[in-house]
Image 1 (tube, rainbow, N blue to C red):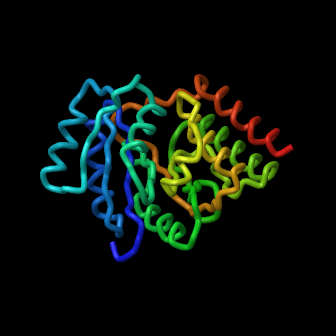
Image 2 (image 1 turned 180 degrees about the vertical axis):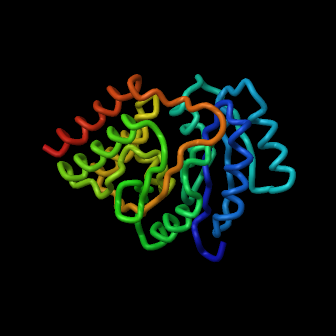
Image 3 (image 1 turned 60 degrees about the vertical axis):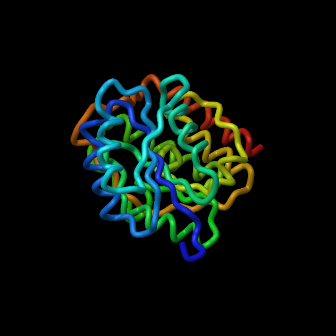
Length: 234
């Protein structure tokens, strides 16, 4: 890879047979750097695994592994992270909401020397298209206020779309069980002193399949890590 760090795209997928073909096509067309795409099949009851295997016959950088622990977002991403031995990891959602062109910007920032690069919907050049109003309001206020109060260098800390050097992921223990692990990871890495930056990204609401995100169910867990980050600063 001409001295560059290996890039692995990790995609947790629970019943995403409708969305995955579009997501994989877009990644293949838009990510300029050599990469491996690793789909973590999170106890799907549909053809998620078969869809990936069909793509893998044509594109040898695509593979699927099963989440062999309890079902759930965090266990799925931990399984994906554990499959990567070195280089750089970027977490991408299976529903095509994340812009694959942002991965190129992220990777260039890693090559500049950053440890973590956050995709930000709320910085200049970023945008969030669609989605529920309450979810948008919560993530926007959370990101802006956390950046102001703690100095964390991103306006979109709750966004799961982030790129990490594998070695920094290995430096923390992920405790959160649900979607709030995205916030947990970034605030822990910030307080460990790792070099973090953000790049603009455009998020679009899913066009196929069904979301597993439940804002009221997970809001309390986001608030827990928000408070942890704030009081840790003191």
